[in-house]
Amino acid sequence: MPYSYDPQNIFAKILRGEIPNDTVLETAYTLAFRDIRPQAPQHVLVIPKGPYVTHDHFCAKASEAEIVDFARTFGRVCELLGVCPGEGGNGFRTIANAGADAVQEVPHFHMHILAGRPLGPMLMRAG
Ligand code: 5GP
Image (cartoon, rainbow, N blue to C red; front, side, top):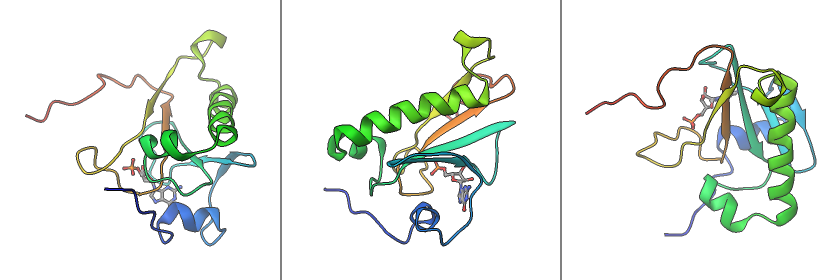
C-alpha cells in the first residue's frame, strides 16, 4: 500500500512553526532538534522537511538534493554534539523506527541520535 502522509502529525506542526522546538541545526531541507523526552544525555531527532513517513519512503521518493542535505546535516549534528568517534567523541547510536513492529510514534521520518552514556545492547529481547 502506498504511503499516505498525515499533515497533522506533530513533526509537521513543528515544521510549520505551530509548536516550538529546541533546534540544533536547520538547513533548506532538514531540521535537527532535541527530543522532548530524552532517553540519553544527548537525544536529537533529524527530520527531512518534506512529507515522508518512514526511512524507506524517504529513500525511495526524496530528491537527491534532499537526501544529500539530510546526510550532510546528520553528520554536522554529530560533529556539533561532539560524539563522532573519529574526532575524539565517545560515539552514538542511530535509530529510525518505521511502522507498527518498530513502534513508530510519529509518522514523519526521523532519525534519532542518542549519545552521552554507554547505550547497552542494541535491542532488548522481549520474547
Ligand atoms: P518514534 O517512536 O516515532 O521513533 O519517536 C518519536 C519521538 O518523538 C519520541 O522520542 C518522542 O519523545 C518525540 N516527540 C514526540 N512529540 C514531540 C514533540 O512535540 N517535540 C519533540 N521535540 N519531540 C517529540
